[in-house]
Image 1 (spheres, rainbow, N blue to C red):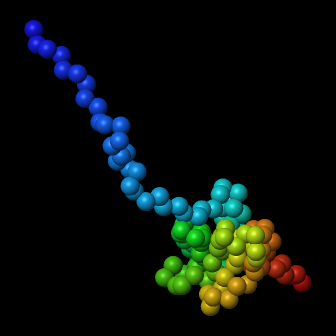
Image 2 (image 1 turned 90 degrees about the vertical axis):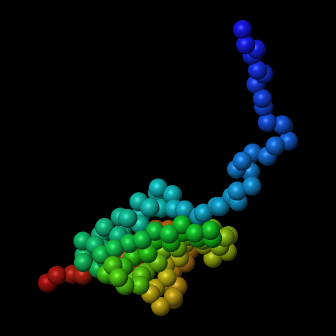
Image 3 (image 1 turned 60 degrees about the horizontal axis):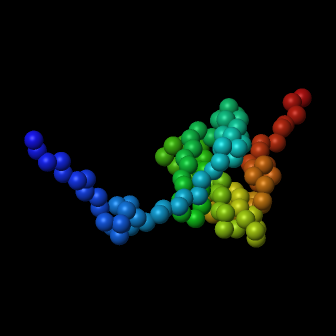
Length: 122
């Protein structure tokens, strides 16, 4: 009969294969934040103001961009920058020209700058 070979294991000092891969951390929106932004987006689409959106998760910030037409530059950018949370607030709404329209600690208050005012009929 043949001899059974012992199981060979890697030495304890061998590095884990993924230990050298850089850890990429991205800023994201949580479900509550996305619900708020998509609710506003849906109402603005229904009003004929917006037609498209994009979401970018970057290293320093997360960006929800809204467009009037798909091929345009963003009409507005809703940004979350956690690094600014203790100072001016993590959330901001930035216009097409780069002007910060509103900045704050609470997303609903920051999004209020984009709300369409109700007009009286009559």
